[in-house]
Image (cartoon, rainbow, N blue to C red; front, side, top):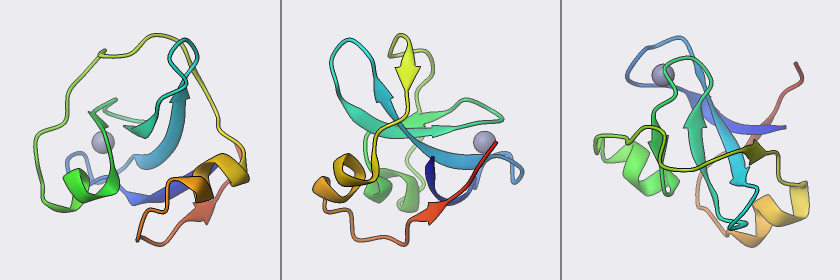
Length: 79
Ligand SMILES: [Zn+2]
């Protein structure tokens, strides 16, 4: 699983990179407060996250994450 660092909102959660199972859309979701953002730019600009926008999530592969070409540091973590 991959993340882009700690959540600015709850200061506890990890900003996980997740994928909506139905649409295949890859986005960012905090594993603690469950705020969601479309991309890291939205997180960094401190734009308000949404909640429960997407349905079931799965975790994208490293290739899928890299394909997003997000210009942020990406970290790997394990449960
Ligand atoms: Zn959070």
